[in-house]
Each structure stands twice: as structure tokens, then as C-alpha cells.
Amino acid sequence: MAGIQWSRTGTLAAVASSDPARARALAAEADDPENVTAYGDYAALLADPGVDAVYIATRHPQHARLITACAQAGKHVLCEKPLTVTGAEAASAAAAAAGAGVVLVEAMMYRFQPQTERIRAAIAEGLIGTVLHVDVSCAFATGFDPADRLFDPSAAGGAILDVGCYAMSFARMVAGWSLGDDAVEPAGLTGGGHLSPTGVDDWAVASLVFPGGLTASVRTGTRLADSSAACIYGSAGHLRIPNPWTPGKGDTVPRAELSRVGEETRLLPCEPAPLFGAEIDALWAARDRGAAGAMSPADSVATMRSLDRWRRAVAETA
Image (tube, rainbow, N blue to C red):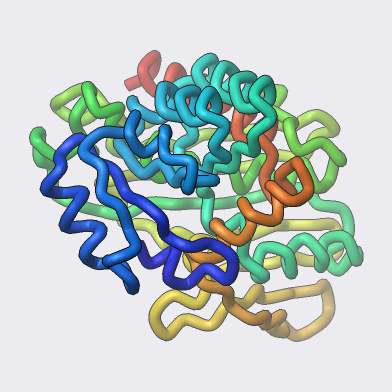
């Protein structure tokens, strides 16, 4: 709901849930609830001619089916991360969107932030020289609860899918900038981690090697206390990003810390943008162009394929 309220381009027309009461409650939270239709099933919303685009915020296993349904209904799609549960599902969903001529954007919120663009520009300007290595984490620590979706295999639980997708996306993003290929995947991946009592990963690490030799270390966890920061190392210095995922949230100031060899560390500040609103605005801009800008479907599919490999590595070593 906050995304629509902070968006410069989108207007909330309808909401849907498998629970009609929940749909009505959500509609009541809108700025203008009298002009928001609440549907008790998704098919009714997709049949609404007043809906141009759909934000999918269901649990992971429903994403692929709903993306395809939206595409068949001619609706553009902003889908929560991870795009799907597997790389094969992601490729199928992307193909459905392309075949229907609709835009598909994964709601990986940091990708649409000015802070991320400032990092890209700093690298393009050669401020840290040739990029050599990326170290990135997205993790948090919570108690184990077998009833929680995070630990529920039927809900596609696990740290890698829930927040490890951020870390893998970031490493791939930087490699893509360096190689000029936003669909680049690791040429080599080794990983390990720990499985919770329900069998899903609750922390995991991986070492990546990309074509051309750029390397990355990625970490994630739902029971792993970590800084959730990122650092990009180059031949002439490095960039440290204290908060790569939610810049500007709370009292934080979006910034990257630039350290060049022989120079004092200096800040590269930038303006924040509404976290969820920026995603919606990016979808609208993508619709107007006919293609996504900051994050293409091919990019999202490559991340899902890489997450498949990471999850297999953990399963084989845990």
C-alpha cells in the first residue's frame, strides 16, 4: 500500500486476496478507499479493465502462476522478490510476459534507488580502478519457528530465497556492469551453509567467479547476525556501502564510502527515493519504453538460476 501512496505515477485501483475480508481491510487502508475495489479472488481483479498493472506480493510459490495469469490478461507486472522459486519457473514467466507484450519487473527495491545508480557511476568513472572483488551480505537473525514461512518448505522458505536473492543480485549486478552483460552468471560457484530442522537453509555462503576473473563472496541467513553491507574492491580503491538494501530508511543517509589508495575516505552522498514508490515508478517508465531499465527479466532469470546452484551447493554440503 505504501508503494502506491509514495509513487509519482501509480494510482491504486483495486486489491485482491484469496480472503475477501482481507481484501476489504487492505482497500480500507488506501488514501481514497471509496475508489478502490476489493476482490475476493485474483481472476476478478485481472478481468478489471481499469487495472493496467499488478503488484504481486504473495508467497514465493504463487509468483510464477500469477505472473503468467497477469501476462495472459494483458497486465504489466511488478513481482516481489524472488521472482519465482526456480530458474526454470523464472524463464517461463519471463517468456510469458514477453509473448504477451507486457513488462515484467522484479521488485528488488535497491535496484531502483539513486544510491545504486551513484555506485554504478562511480565505477564507470574509474574511481576504484578495475573491479576485482565484491563482498556482500543480506542477513538477519530470528528465532526458529517451524510454522513461520521462513522455515516452511511448502512456502519455499529458506534464507537464500528470502534475502540471499539480494546478495546474489548485487554480486551479479556489479559483474554485469563490468562485463556489459546484465544476464551474466557465475562461471564457478562453490557454497555451503546450514539447514534448519525443517530442511530449509537458515544461513549460507558462496564464492563466485565470473567470466573475466571477477570474484565475489556472498552471505545470507535468517539466523545469521551480519552487517548486511556491501564492499566493491578495485585495483585503485574500494567502495563500501553500509546500507545497500534500504537506503534512506529511518534515519539512515544513502551513501557510499570511497577509499582510494593513498587518499582519505570520502563520502559519495545521494538523494533517497521512496523505497516501494520507486519500484512502481520504474515499472511505469518501463511500460512507456516497452522494456525495463534498471532490472530486466533476463537479469532476474540469471539471478534465479544462480540461486538454484547456491541452494544445491548447500544441500550437498550441509
